[in-house]
Amino acid sequence: MDERDREKIYSKRVRAGKRTYFFDVKSTRTNDYYLTITESRRHPQGEGFVYEKHKMFLYKEDFDKFVEALQETVEHVKTELMPDVDFTQFVQRERDEQSDFASELKWE
Figure 1 (cartoon, rainbow, N blue to C red):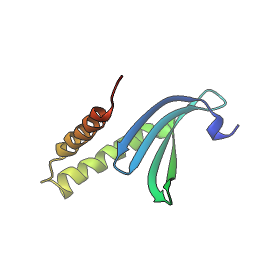
Figure 2 (tube, rainbow, N blue to C red):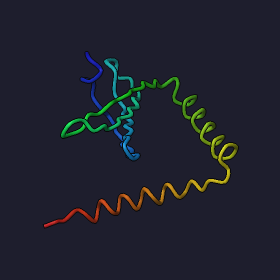
Figure 3 (tube, rainbow, N blue to C red):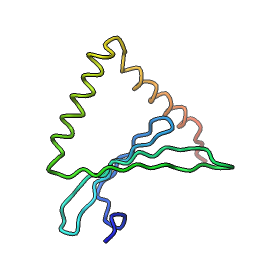
């Protein structure tokens, strides 16, 4: 069975400018679970767009190590490399972008 044919159990999308990240939980043939993390970047091409995708597979035995390393790395950047940056500004900017998008929707 091809990986694309396996059942998607859970999915979370994170929009980040021209990039979108997808966190998908999928099942194996033996009813085990794994996580795919996909980065999708949109590039203009001709009259439309093309999407460049990069995918990672993360298996259950590595979940805790991965999350711990990610948290440590982000914390290092925030506290050691960029201590003067207010990272909450990016959360507010995302909320503003989402509300701008929502205001464009019109319900009839």
